[in-house]
Length: 139
Image 1 (spheres, rainbow, N blue to C red):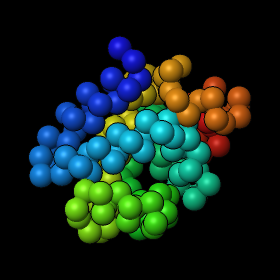
Image 2 (spheres, one colour):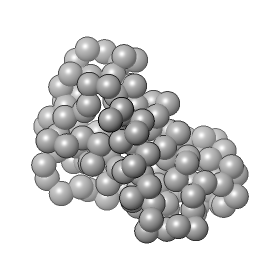
Image 3 (cartoon, rainbow, N blue to C red):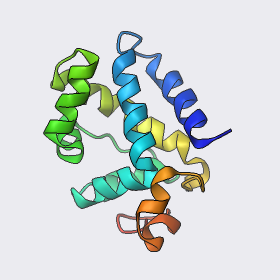
Image 4 (cartoon, rainbow, N blue to C red):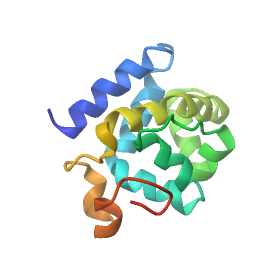
C-alpha cells in the first residue's frame, strides 16, 4: 500500500469521529500528502514544537497540541485557507487539527519510524529524514 493510500485510510478512520468535517479531513490529507511527515515535523520543530511532535512518532503517549500551537505551526493564512475550503471558521479547523493530527502521525509511523515512501523525505536534509527516534532534534 502506498503512503497516500495509508494516509487516506488512516485519516478516514480518525475522521469518523467527526463526520461533519469531510472537507477538513481532506485538508489534513492534503497537508500531509504535500509536505510529508518529514516536512510537517520540520515545520513543527522550527516553531519550537519538536519535542511535542516527536512524541507522536515515538513509543510514548502522544502529547496534545493546542489550537494556538496549530496556528503557529501551520500559519494563520494556511489555516484560514483550509478552513474556507471546508466552510468552517479557522478556530473550528484548528480544533479539528488538534484532534486528528497527533493520531494520524502516530499511526503513519508504526514502530516510531517515518516510512521510506514519505513524500517529505526528499525535501529535507539526510539527517532529518533518517533519524526519527528520540527528542526534538532527532529527525
